[in-house]
Length: 115
Length: 109
Image (cartoon, rainbow over all chains, first blue to last red; front, top):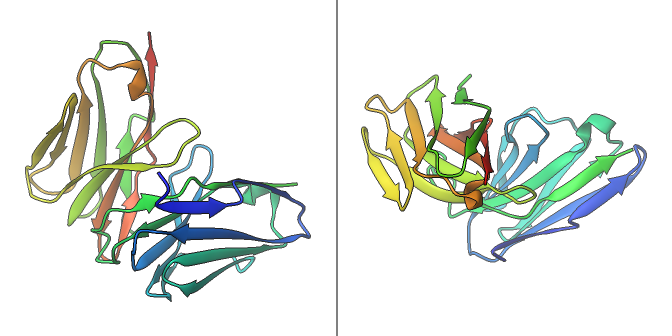
């Protein structure tokens, strides 16, 4: 499946580093999402964008900063992360944000390790 | 806030046995979706249920949506090793989709 791509696939960073995760969707969708998936925890919705406008921010620490320059691209900028931020970060897209009724298509994820 | 609970957390079965995972919401849902995530993979959409009491089948998989639209189940008949992975339900209510914690299925050949 290549509808939603994410780079890098793996990332190891120190707590003082600054890095960015990139997501690109080739499905013509209007909504994009960032999720965090930790071991033994449910998928945690972090941010939702609809037509480049942020419509959801689930009390995510400011060390995570999203950016959506257009409806096909979504970034997650990372700085001064903590070891507990180590997780799989998944990007998803859907046709629209319609009360959560649209099917979400997930990217392969970025496996992040914070040392 | 809205919660979606999913049980069991893990299930070990012998190949050929049946498997069921259950999903319960604290509030009425507009729809429920099911996703499968293979080990090392990402969630992949399986199906969406919208109507009260709806039942849908995909080969050996049967999905049900409760009459009150607050619970759902996924049943796999005669599991195969290719069924291994984590099955997530995702309930839509309000403005967003809430994922359950998932049920991880292990199938022993």
